[in-house]
Length: 348
Image (tube, rainbow, N blue to C red; front, side):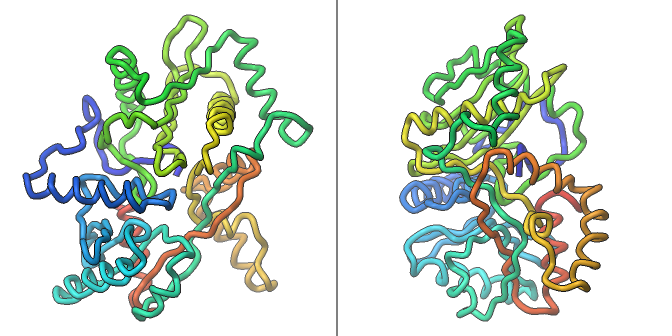
């Protein structure tokens, strides 16, 4: 989700990665981090490493989940060797079923759908992820005229848009980023996100992470984006801006990020995973389906701002990749959806 995070509250500063963890949990987190570093090819893999998630290990792999009532909501796909996918999931199912619960996976890619079906699970498309190939992106041509205007507008108004690697973020800049984060959170009672967000937890500054900074003509830091680096790719984690900022600021920051990624031969940049984006971008196959789709989108759109998110992504001509909700049975589907909405922060 664009700039989405999880958990209510406006803490004075971001929580450190290992806050309130036992020594055993710290060890599990380190073990999970090593697996993600070795096998985390998927754009959502880095977000498994939130300390408010529990880990299940098997066959050299790991999955991350949280319990919401009787539902264990798994954060996207398990990570590890191919054989670890079914091994970790089967192990979690056994544990959860023993207590009368159910398992649901949210934000899954198409890669392991066959493996999930072998375990008796079902899948439905729950949205699409916008992924951009930096090598194919540029600001020339009519198709990107509005993006080009956004970049030029920043320059004309004296705004500075800069890129910094994590290794270039010193103590002074980190203090500025934390101060902006506090201001951004002060106006929000609840933060959203689970499958593609680090939430309120500070993952630390990775040396290869990419920070995009926007400074006003007076030099004040007014906008920050962070892209998490993983196995030669980048995934957008947060988008923050405070105060009076020009229209098109976010677009200008993404444009510069894609330009930097192209120069560094980054394989791909994931902008976000937009829930139900496929319903917005595609008409239904039948009149009845279309009659149901339109009022549903009007109802959901007022709450989730889905159209706005899809329109933002479309500006960068992304590849739209389907993401799935994997669940155990038809009778388990409603409870699984409720668990996911709680995980993402839309329901208490």
